[in-house]
Length: 293
Image 1 (cartoon, rainbow, N blue to C red):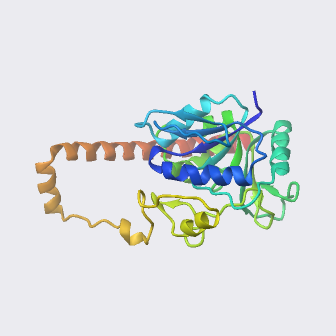
Image 2: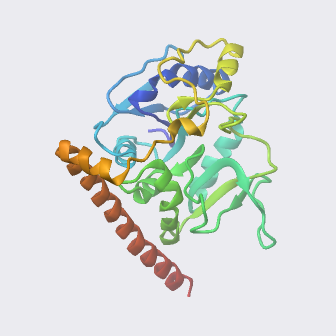
Image 3: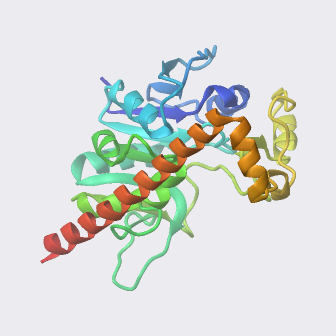
């Protein structure tokens, strides 16, 4: 059993990203010593250069539930979490990754995030000139940028009904109840994983569509990709939907009672989640204050 695995989170809809992702993965991380897994619903993917194990799960499940199910089927103690549009742009610094895994073995660490985000405060001391500890409960303590996770801790942090956004924005308060450390790479340090997902200048997918810059990147890297399936992201206005007047809504739901039922279910789930998060927040803040005494 390997101490660490790489888990690439994806879905069937984004299968067009798999060839570019794994081509660049092999090109810029060809010394990766860890087993590689792809998390998606029903499809399978093979690569002649990388031994990839595809883990399928129920298409009706939420993102978090699929991820949790996938993690439980991986044997390693640590998992390097990557998303399917984090296209590598230069060589991964494997020596630092190896050092981080050894560090996690020897210390009580939940995750080490390789996003260059951390800001050093006056009372903090940087680690290895690369990392700084995150404050429990702070924004993005739970981050889906590339990072190493203690697998069992990540499973404990996930909730079956949450989206990736909800896990990062709301779920991070659960770090208050975890007696482990969270580290992030410092802003002025050298990249360990070099990728760029900036909407204006970077690469990848945004709201289910390709960013325009991908065409130049894939052309430069000699990677073929059919962009027509997902199309390109042009601007946010393409996602703005016109609201129906109240009278029109009444007529629509009168003609489509099944749509009214589905809307009611969505509303019920949304309210239920908000109630859960409210009490969870109360619990974890109280727990953290008690633990600090």
